[in-house]
Amino acid sequence: MAIFTSTDQQSNAPIKGGAATIIAQGTKIKGDMHIDCHLHIDGDFEGNIYSKNTVMIGKTGNVLGNIFAQKLIVNGKFNGVTESSVVEILPTGRIEGRVITPEFVIERKGVFVGESKIVDKNKDREKEKVEK
Image (cartoon, helix red, strand yellow):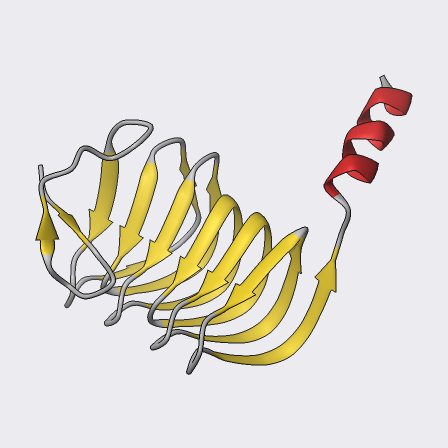
C-alpha cells in the first residue's frame, strides 16, 4: 500500500490506524458516506461524510457538503460545514464555509473564507458525562 504526502511523493509507511479508502482523481461521487477507516479524496465528492477517522482532501480533491470526522486535512477545496476534532488547511488548501473544532490550523498560503467556532474539548466531555 502506498501513501502520498502533501508533496505528492509516495511513502511506503503504513497508515496509522489501518486501511484507507481512496477516491481517485477523475472520480465523481454524490451521496452520503459513513466510514470507519481513513478517507483520501482526490476526485469530486458531493454529500455528507461521517468518519470515525481522518478525512484528507488531496490537491485535486473537491468536496461540497458536510464533513463530520475525527480529523480533517484540506489540501484541495472544501465547501460546507465541518465538525471535527482537528481541522488543518495545508498551503494549497481552501475551505469556504463553517468550521467547528477545538483545534484549527491554517498553514501559510492556506485559505479560509467563512465562520469558525473553536469549542473546548473538555466541555463536550463534561456535557456527555452529565447527560449519561
